[in-house]
Amino acid sequence: MFELDMRSRQPIYEQLVDKLKELIISEVLKADEQLPSVRTLAQQLTINPNTIQKAYRELEVQGYIYSVKGRGSFVNPNSLVINSEKLETVKKELLKVLSEAMYLGLKADDVIALVRELDASIGGTSEV
Image (tube, rainbow, N blue to C red; front, side, top):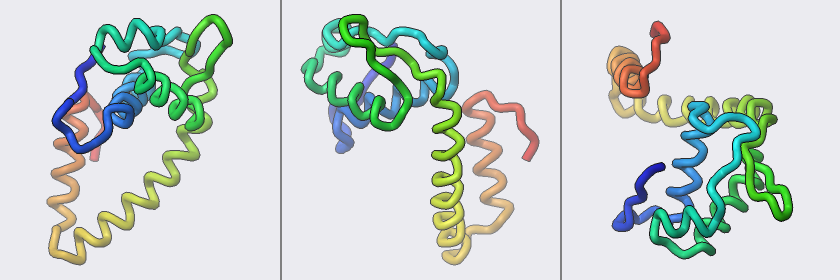
């Protein structure tokens, strides 16, 4: 499914949360699709099942997945609503970071070039 960087300073469960969010947001994992069981994913990634459980719990708290007792974890179809709220938070954070970058000398053209580069790397087609 994906790989984790065991040498990274970022905790493994956070890497797992980020990777799963990415798969959900990009709709690789569809609404109501079942996620791999904790045991299965722990074996595939060769990490402790408690780490997987912690990541799943965090995704559930953030609204990206839901659990059904005895059946497993599934992609939350309501995550699009939550995503719009999260998007507003991200926009505010992005404005702060861009303001600081421009204050430090980053030009608007450089910002636009970075956005275009990012858009191309994720297969986007939007015009900037």
